Image (cartoon, rainbow, N blue to C red; front, side, top):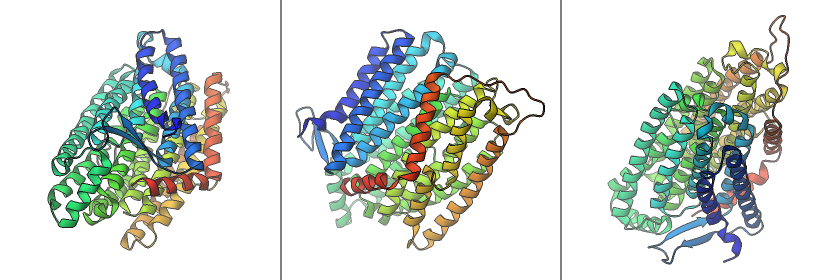
Length: 495
């Protein structure tokens, strides 16, 4: 095994170690150390991705001294390396763009604790992406939950405390269902590693044994991940948590935390149960219905919002619907399109939250439409980023979101009744997306009569991060085919 195969383990290890290290230093050094560590994970994941693009293959990394099926494993290929790279990139630039607000919103004595939680959160996301062990996945799901709640609550006020309690209750419900499903898988198959569990499930399904328990397991997993990723109707906690947290927390929660659970669900569908079995057990049909409803309901809720961050949060509910639509189609093309939309949303939504934070900072930290009128003239850079992010989420050509909607539409072809429902939902949701994003754009670019424009001075870190977000979003909109090729190869090797 080449030395580069150690990189996923290094990423998990150094982010966990970073949590320990940042607890021992002051706030400024906590930010610096955190930035260095996340940059290192970006380099490691990016290097691994380049290696696997040149030579597509899967590696199995044995943790400890015990091989399968008893030991713990990391298993990874091009898809996991791509997701790890995206997660590192988004975390790094979300924190850089939100640095000023972190130091304003979080009490001085708690700032280094915030960065501890960020390190643990990123470590748990890497583990969800790379692990081949179901129980290890559960352990890091719990770490992810605690860290995510902590970064919501970091901005200590009544709204964030209430939002954190809602988030914690719903998330623990999802975690409990996930643990119960793992217990049932172990009881049925005697395995916790994904590949041996898959082999056992295939044999049991072929013999007709344990049909009901397998259906229950699949149902529990789907509901657990739907709760934790805020799929309709389990989305009620999301707008409060994402809308009230400090901007960097909102960006990471929306862009990454929700996606970690969906990636785990995709791995379970493909690597543990098997896509053919999932389709035969009809689980994808339930996800498909929930996805269509999420696309519509999330967009309608966003239209009704008068608060820019909560509007973006409800937009995430709709975008989760797009991702689950791909999964619910029940074919490989749908899963590939869902993975691509994960990347698009992971890059675009943090840019929207960060730009919204910049617009609010230029408007006396007010986030309602009345105070945001004319904000584009007070903070032009944030306005440009918000405009590009909005056009991407609507699905305008040459921006990242267009490719995602195009591939979802293509995946729906030849799917019978699902095709017409999917295309209708995509069309209606796109129109609704346009309604609330174009309204937001119109508000921030509308001058108040007689207003004297005072330009808001962005920090150098904020300006740098926003420029990078803009460049990457446009690049993904123009050159999405290479990314799709990596996802397609990775999905083919995932089993």
